[in-house]
Image (cartoon, rainbow, N blue to C red; front, side, top):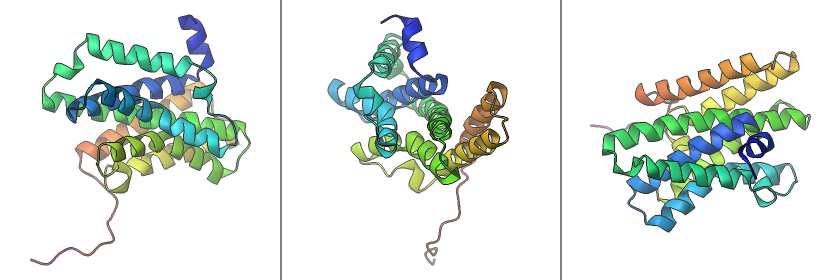
Amino acid sequence: MDWQTILLDLDGYAVIGTVAFAVSGYLLGVRKHLDLLGVIIVTLLTAIGGGIIRDVLVGRMPMVFLDNSSLVVIALTMVLAWLVRLHKRESEVLTSLFIIADSIGLAAFSLAGAKLGVEFHLNAFGVVVLGFVTAVGGGIVRDMMVNDVPFILHKDFYGTVSILVAGMLFLLSRQGWDHPLLLQLLFVGGVLLRLVGHWGELSLPKLARKKGP
């Protein structure tokens, strides 16, 4: 399978999301001091976990079981990450790279999942759910594998960003405005919102009472 075939077989945002989440999974595996197999497992689950859940929801065989394109992209991403020695970077650099890669993957997979929902002629709820599970499913599995509380449950507007991106895509598609330029702006906006939420330490209000002095 050549490069052109790989890129044609995958939606553009799915390619971006796969690469970004593969990098974030690789970096998390390194930060958690996993062995080689552990890093490979975490990388795979991060990059394809959400897509598998999405495909099950729409009643089709997960594409990763039928088409090797995603696996080839993940493998090449891991090899490149190793060649540029990402695993040798300082801890603070690894953390920043992880957040950036995770933000790109979140926005890209939100769009990829939502686009599938639009193609299946789902309503707003269905489109948002597909975008949401595609974007956060792999991250949830990844974090649970390494015994972390998933981002979506406690900070960074993580899940909110996915919902907003998928919801905006649905609205744009209903108006016939879902052309490439607006989708690119939506993608960039999603990435920036996630980064601002993280580095600005922003989060949704918590319902639990604050502990007394």
